[in-house]
Amino acid sequence: MNKYIISLFVITLLFSSCKKEQDPFLVSKKNVGFLTDSTKVKDLKLVFPNDSVVNYKGDATFKIPMNMVEIYEKGGNLLLTLTPKKMSDSSSTITNIRIEDSRFKTEKDISTLSRFKDIQDAYKISKIDNLLNSLVISVNEINAQFAIDKTELPANLRYDMNLKFEASQIPDNAKIKYFFINWD
Image (tube, rainbow, N blue to C red; front, side, top):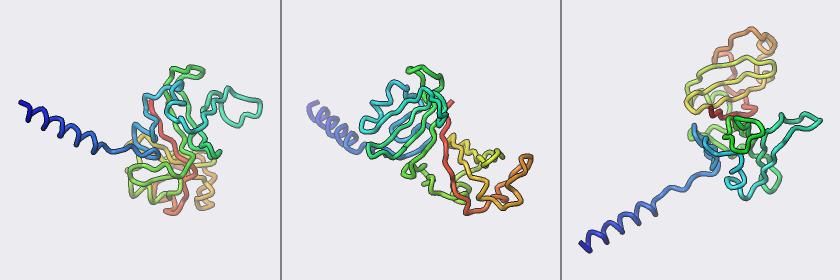
């Protein structure tokens, strides 16, 4: 009996010591670093204890929409811009995360430094939306949307708002302007 308890203790100790540490910059379907799809606005200072959490209530300059939350490193670099599901509700979870810092990468190594070809090689593109100044590439596999500025496109494709884009029309070297993770 004593050997059984000691063996169980040793096995438990081995498994707990092998626990993989979470990457603070990994982007997946349910996580962005330490932020999860169930993190509440009121808990952001606990999730980012060494960073600055800035909650905007809206201002006269209209730089960012009302109630967006920005996460800055202590050095001043913008990491993430978050949108709560319910405005002015600290118990609300986050619905949208705009990835601002290039250190944040998906499991397939896609970041803000990636190109369109990188997205296309790594994921199945679900949809391409033609917006006024950009294209939005949706990847349902990770609940992500990647924005590509229309200045990255050939001139003859930039101004037709009715054009239904195919992946083949987007240059392989088109840069990602920014990307979002959406949690509903």
